[in-house]
Length: 137
Image 1 (cartoon, rainbow, N blue to C red):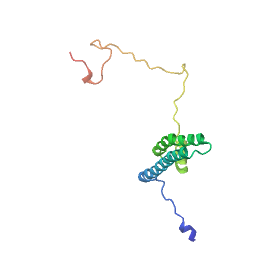
Image 2: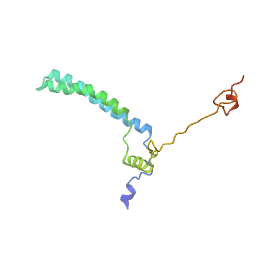
Image 3: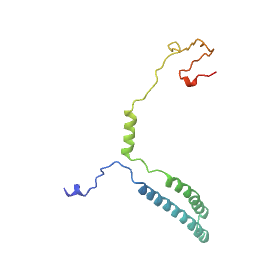
Image 4: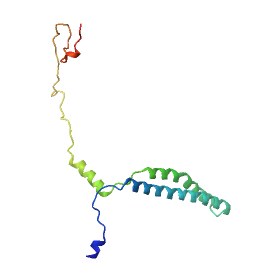
């Protein structure tokens, strides 16, 4: 009985608040930029120490300095991943909604509407139904 009371139960399917989402994106961005700064410092230390395989280490540090800012911006601007419940609800809504399709007819079955009007007294072929559209004069 004690174990059941200690567990937190989620009673809503609402998304995290925008402030929480923003905070987690900030943490990811600062973490990645911290790793980039560590690459810069490590590159400077490696050049002064000259360990074996120095070019390989410098290439790795350089790749971190170049690609981490790009990845950090992409990840920081990305929306949070959808949960399983959100994906399931989206799939259920997509499956529940019937797909509307237009009836298919062959060219022989198609009926075409032809409008054939007699000229009016004024010589116009079209008589507007709204009196404001009629030409005066």
